[in-house]
Amino acid sequence: MQFKSLFASSVLAIAAVSAQTQTTGLLGNAAVINDNPSGISLVTLFAYAAVFGNGTVTGKITFTPNVNGTGIIVNADFEGFKGLAGPFGYHIHDQPVPTSGNCNGTLAHLDPYQRGQVIPCDINSPATCEVGDLSGKHGAVNDTAGTPIIYDTQYIDYYISTKEGIAAFIGNRSVVIHKAGGGRVVCANITAVTSNVPSGPAVTSPAAPDSGSVSSFGISSVLALGSILAAAVLAL
Image (cartoon, rainbow, N blue to C red):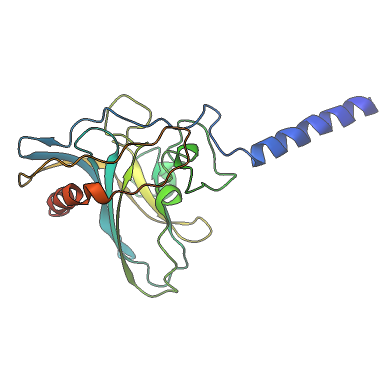
């Protein structure tokens, strides 16, 4: 009996260590999405947005498919954070905000590959992160020391999607902003939006990383298009 107990304890200990060192999903690395619906059809922009406005944090985060279908152009524009301790993470959560407005009802981060949060996301290896961990993959909002700030950033995320019917789809989900320690500050539903946009040249993104590669997201070649798309969505 004593031997069995020691053996069981050893197995549990190994399992615990394995969980603590897990840096990718139980179902593998996140896949690059190459067939997002085009963000532009003639002069109409199709995108998704989450709008915040609880007085503590205001602003908007928009998600626009890249013109070539690979990756989503993300524009995050937040203002506020007065009296709060950061850094501030923000993530796509699995469920929409309930009618009560309670951010806890959004449940956990979007995590179709079952990666979990035991080990923090490695910003240099985004394919190994939770699909919904936007700040883990692209940087959190810096600590404001309690004073109000304006935060504005743009990047491409290759692992979220506007394609319905797949696990990485962001529609009918939500974005939650967290303060230091994980408390939920504000949440907002991700909803579809459309708008007229000025015509302009198509600008393609740099080559998307392999799902298992270690890479950074330089997006200098898409900023021209991203600025056009962002201006149209943010004007809604």
